[in-house]
Length: 127
Image 1 (tube, rainbow, N blue to C red):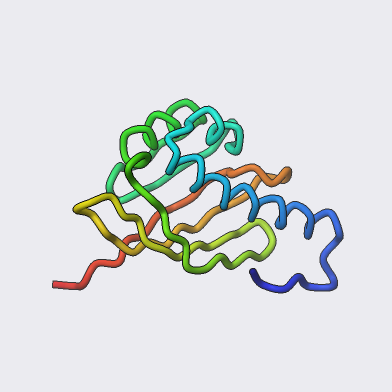
Image 2 (spheres, helix red, strand yellow; image 1 turned 180 degrees about the vertical axis):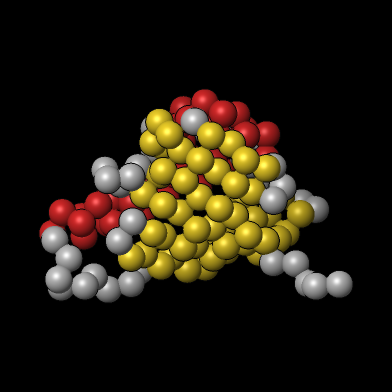
């Protein structure tokens, strides 16, 4: 996790820290298939964009999307989490045999540290 700028308010630093915890938990909940717990981390107006599933908006629609594209026996293996302000970037791999793909997720946090949105990118070699 990136160091905090000493000029940032303690509240802003706390929200970023809470957001990092929520991001980590989101992967654990998705891997366990616990959509209710996952939903508790989402802002009401959450927005998700994924190349494998398109665009989803709102807590219920995002939970439905993730029930279809993640979960057991899938597993997110996180390599790095970088956080600054209301942005968090995660690099890792998603494994669900026969799929094993590297990804980058770019999250945005609400003012309360809830997940307001994210965009997923996959590593794919150019043609």
